[in-house]
Amino acid sequence: MSQKKPIFVVAMDRKRLIAMFAVTAMLVPAFTSCREEELIQKPVVTPVGPGGDNPSGPVSCLGFYLLNEGNMGSNKSTLDWFDATKDEYVRNIYGAINPDVPKELGDVGNDLQIYGSRLYAVINCSNKVEILDAATCRRLGQVNIPNCRYIAFDGPYAYVTSYAGPVRIDPEYKQIGYVAKIDTATMAVVDTVHVGFQPDGLAVAGRRLYVANSGGYMVPNYENTVSVIDIPSFKLEKNIEIAINLHNIIADSRGQLWISSRGDYYDDPSRLYCYDIAAGKVTADLDIPVSDMWLDGDCLYVVATSWSYVTMSNETKYAVVDVVERTKVQDCFITDGTEKRIAVPYGVAVNPVTKEIYVTDARNYVNPGDIYCFTPEGKLKWTATTGDIPAHFAFRLK
Image 1 (cartoon, rainbow, N blue to C red):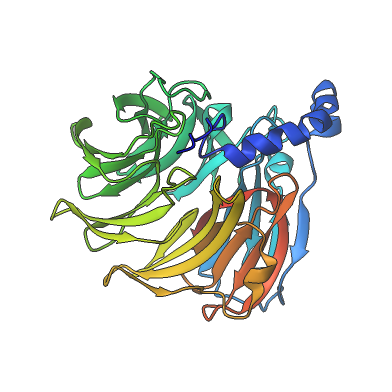
Image 2: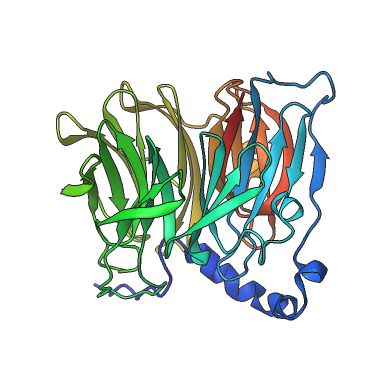
């Protein structure tokens, strides 16, 4: 039996790292000039509908923000805004609104959430959570957290996963990850609790916080657990074994956790798992690869671009899962053939009011991507150019 070659790329950031080397030469001159000359880019407005006094969607959803990750090391994370009241997609709004912020948004935007009146952007390799006014996008402050990944909220606190250590591939990686507890009023870290290695997504269910541990730096010795934290005491209760290299985790309204595994990119493919909290066991193991997923009611929308070192190629997939029946009910929610235009489906979201479906295309991970808007029936409505590696959505409601 042939031995697998060692992988010297972070599992979850593999594509970013590959693309980083491709753009390094172009970036060097930029770092030598002043910010006024090379970093502040004017927003680009793209009309995508009737606009004016006759927007195509209800104004109870004012629009959404889209966080573009940007390649690792390029400092090109950007923020876009879709204005539903005008039917305009506005690309790269952060720099113009916050011209006095050095290096703009930062390096690798990893998560985006609106909570209360504030917008929280987790900027992974800049080791910070940017806190903005959700209405104006004006910067309010930042919380410094090393190698931060994802964010969730409960009551007056925000919870952020942190890899804690530096970006480094090492099967014997020693630095265990943690969850930081942030007081949203003071924007200060008030406590931390250690979980597994390289924790990623997290979800609140009841009075507990569930954290998906990846072990992505420890190739091939991936983590395989979900850490359970008691929220009132903020203490680790236990670790639950699920599968290797866990990534996203979503809690539904039926006492279930939906957890994605990236697999090992060889013989163990990406899969989707359902964990029943009350029963304390996995109740569904679905052969559905996952890059991103979004829960809308009882429907879980999934997009995937799955890399295989066996075939040395990507495979793209779409799916809709019924969380009640815990089964796939639709192979592809795009019904007009537009999926053939999408090279790298990367992010997905569903408008909570109009039920329109959004899919982002990372293209080649180096150049600007695209966003596609589909009707609830899966027909293309509009498309626009985004920043580099468009990924994370946050809807702003009235």
